[in-house]
Length: 264
Image 1 (cartoon, rainbow, N blue to C red):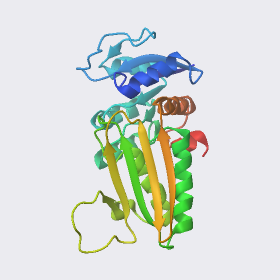
Image 2 (image 1 turned 120 degrees about the horizontal axis):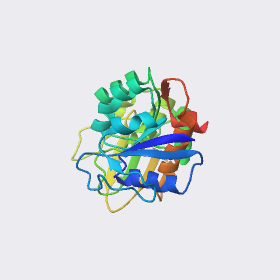
Image 3 (image 1 turned 90 degrees about the vertical axis):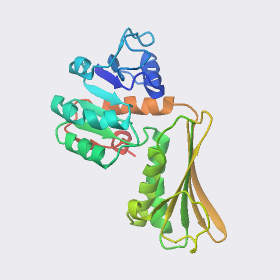
Image 4 (image 1 turned 180 degrees about the horizontal axis):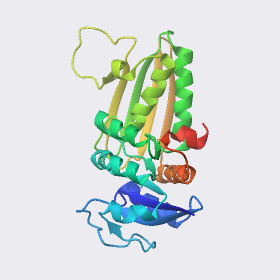
């Protein structure tokens, strides 16, 4: 039995993870700890039917676990990197919006702990990453403009989404370019020059309770090729994260992706 601690357990994804564990969506996993911020409204209260109470003290529950599943905020995730590395625990990271300093902390932690870090945990999206890399390779230098449109619920704080950036990185790998050098985020006003052939455009929509909707468009004169993924439930991300936790238990230190977990 692989023992799991959830960080960010009081949030939307955390609650979904707890529910999926209760229903044994991925067999062989046991919840042994649930962590959130000190001011979380559910602090000290049991989660669902698990009998596990929400705490703000990760150090108190981490010794009992094999894998920490983290859907907290970007500051909490990067701030925990050093001590998770010290503990040598498996770490599944689904947090998005992590900056350069946080990425460096996670990469350093991966030298001492096994880590799965992915912008999206669903099988469908990770298959899409592979398809987009191949599409970028096939359409390179053939006159196709790339635009990425992502839609999420009104409460999402980071934009573009981690998934949208992952899609852009997949296309960029296929095209053989550095995404940071060609990304353009939104457009406004009148520009002197037309759209450049090299750029990859990102557009973020926020509204309602949209779980996650992503479209990558390759447009040229006379045709448009689109790749889309629409999540209708957070369960798909939670189940993916739990599959990653089951896969990660007992692995050697290193930085892994969902493509390693899923074999995509």
